[in-house]
Image (tube, rainbow, N blue to C red; front, side, top):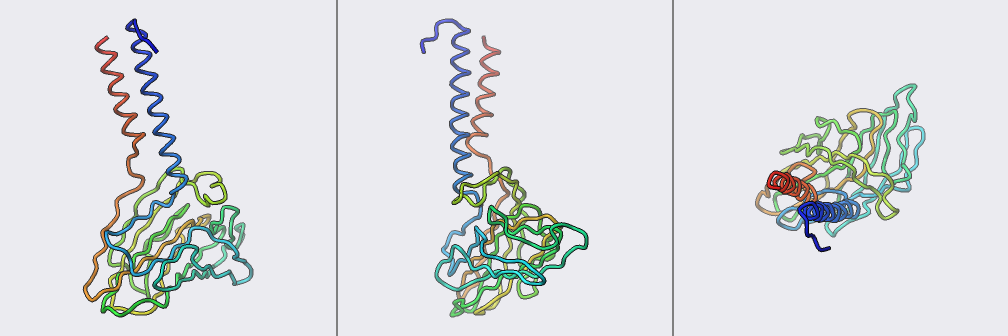
Length: 251
């Protein structure tokens, strides 16, 4: 487009900024859709990793619930999630269930989630275990334990808006998702039990990830930052707005 008048130049500038913001916002949205989990990695590879991104095959009934094996698992151990729940009388649904988006929805219950990891490499004298949670709702931070012990380090990373889950089946509607990170530094063992409880009813467990690091020295995991981090779209929108204001003042 050839811009001759000042008004036309201003229109071109506005159009360019809008197009750029729209483009980067689309990229940011696509990235959120395909990589929604916002889990963090350490500078070194873990000895083993177990991750649950989609839950399926669970059944609910009087005092029973299915056991979930990880849907992402690296070498170095095995894992499962088991659920014990206490129904709240009169609330509905009275039991946890697996939703169409393959989250575990805790309706009118308080549920204790036990994450059992076993078959771990214990050749080194020390093990660091890191658990990360993605939850639509909230987790009681005082309930996050490993073998009955509070974390060495704990971070409530905040709530990321509009996160898509179950992306392999189209993602469904986006949900604000809260992320938690906990670390334990312990003597080596071939098995551990991690646990946590929902903070209030009507919470969905969307993702769980456990990494462990075995060595003769103590590995101190780097704590993650808050979510969500500023995106290119946000920064570009701010810059574009500033340039537009300056352009208006100079015309």
